Length: 303
Image 1: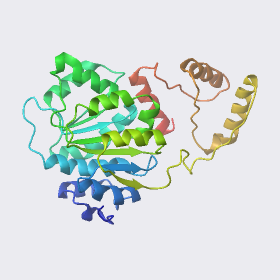
Image 2: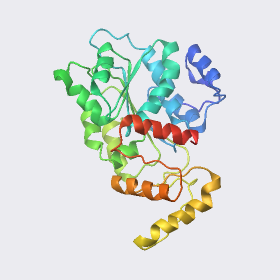
Image 3: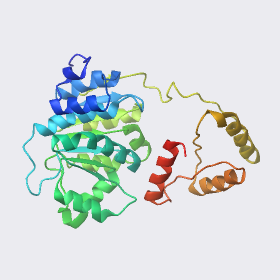
Image 4: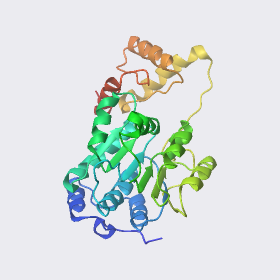
């Protein structure tokens, strides 16, 4: 395995990429980038274990751009060269935004393919051709089958990324992921990133990766060490009052996210909290994509 890098200049990216990194204020690589980038640049398959926010997106994007630039240009009817699979549309769009910061200056294009929104616009983008597809597995299978397979294909794919692979596994996407991987040429380079690496993931990794390098920042534990956890056992009718107590305690410390088990429970809790004069919004799969995007942006902005 190649030695870790200490600066962007050591990692073999193009001059244009270095200029974008400087413009974006990325002074030096993070620990996961220091180890993962040279391994991926060497052409090896990789398992990267690192928590969200560690810089793993850039760790697979920078080698991907060089990989694509080293390939022959796309011809008419060609599908992508790089395929990035994610568990959620939100992560798909986030990676798309991160990629876009580089693709324009490199003369490359990308398409985000995900459910919950109109399919016709995504089909039109794919037909125009793009070197990079960022997708959720289910919608990608829809695209491969659309118009009798004439929308896009995986014949040119030589670089595959599975981001947040543990979440994809937990959400039941393994059959779709395997179906896509079976249609990608075997001499591809495959990169898998995950915040955790439970035993079930090892079986998946053995099937889709070849002699991978494993890069680990932090432990393999299921629980992120930066998250403090408390368990409070209550009767059902006591839960809302306990929630109000907790929200009152943390109210001045910033925003909060409350997870529930069903869509209808999210909507019911939203009404109850609004009656208690809390500024809040609901977010779940039954809400239109446009409204979900707006909710996430408002939450990030603290509105």
